[in-house]
Length: 114
Image (cartoon, rainbow, N blue to C red):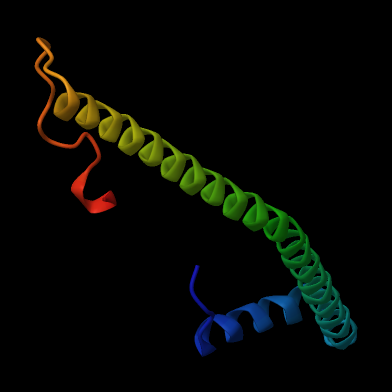
């Protein structure tokens, strides 16, 4: 719903003047203004409280996210080290003795992690 223009405001004023009369109209304006002010104040308070709650929740979540990422990196590093160790053990068996089993000639570790 868009903002009210001058013509719409004039129609509303005339209708209010006819319905409530000239004596009650200033009181109604004051009451309406006071109600709108209180509504905005309550809305701002609710918004600030909501933002504080989100900040309070976001900090621990960021810590957990960082910890999970670090654990994933540690697991990946350990996995690649064990694969490299296994590959070097397999390569040393091939050089010291002949084996009837064909061994892979390429590393099982992706090239970007070597």
